[in-house]
Amino acid sequence: MSTPALLALADGTLFHGTSIGADGETIGEVVFNTSLTGYQEILTDPSYTKQMVTLTYPHIGNYGVNAEDAESRAVFAAGLIIRDLPLIHSNFRADMSLGEYLVKNNVVAIADIDTRKLTRILREKGAQPGCIVTGDNIDAAAAVEKAKSFGSMAGQDLAKVVTASDKYEWHTAEWKLGVGYTVQSNPKYHVVAYDFGVKHNILRMLAERGCKLTVVPAQTPAAEVLALNPDGVFLSNGPGDPEPCTYAIDATREFLAKGLPLFGICLGHQILGIAAGGKTSKMKFGHHGANHPVQDLDSKHVMITSQNHGFQVDETSLPANVRVTHRSLFDGTVQGIALTDKPAFSFQGHPEASPGPHDVAYLFDKFIASMAERK
Ligand SMILES: NC(=O)CC[C@H](N)C(=O)O
Image (cartoon, rainbow, N blue to C red):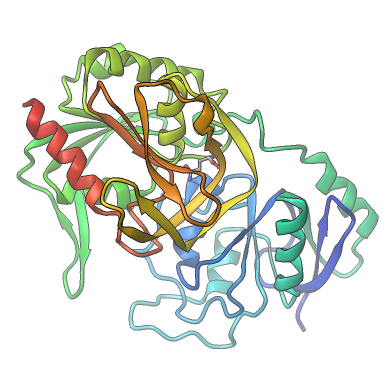
């Protein structure tokens, strides 16, 4: 017999379904993601801390879960909400089913609800807090109150919560079919990567391109990083609101002053935007998916990109020395910036994909080129 589960939204909407993960309850901000595949990478993306993800694609779990596709050390999403978990999974790389993985990682998750209705609510009203509860005698009114108690993602400094506790070196490069993960044994550049909740594929793509990486905790002062004598500094993705990450914003200002090559992704992009003099704001429901069109304003190329953000850099707040380089073709929001007087640039979406298309991978090459030029 399957265990019942309830998803309650802060606005009082109730979705009755089936528990497909751990028993218990969880609260978080509910966001919808339009990726067709990549549920394992999404669950393990630290940027989803305190967020529960609903996938708009109806069948989730078809190809199971494997040991190689994790994007970090653990599952960070606060919960999973799907339409249908298939009875069987099938893939030559799979070690277990999605349901087994959710139980093993203690993730509360619900299936058999109308995810189209849920997505319409989030699109019209904006991302909102929710609560999933599993079990036979669920108190729906209490679940709505718990959802309301979550408050807002605005103002939450979560990068310093999920970051690594100590600095470490990273050498793993990209995954190759029939080989698995490869190792960078002959690096040309030393990059210090700030871990605000870094996705592993970013580190792998930098290693693949000839970088030795020293990954440092979010609150590492600029002086400690400069003492490592890096060729460039990378600012990672991460959860929460960028504005309270003053430690990272201050450090970034110091790197800008030194003229070090800088590359930021997602939270790292927002931190660069603030450090350069701009402002960020919370979006209505953000961008989460692996199928969002973005235009490179220099080449005019349109790329299909991976996205996961709920905050944005406000275009009108940017000073004269910051140029908008990329734009979302969904809503016109800023997707990339570059400083006109420093070797620093950033992207709001995810050039590392994982999951998603690799259309924006050229930005990693651009970062390598800016380090090569300075050397
Ligand atoms: N993936 C990310 O780095 C997300 C950045 C930030 N937490 C946001 O929601 O906008």
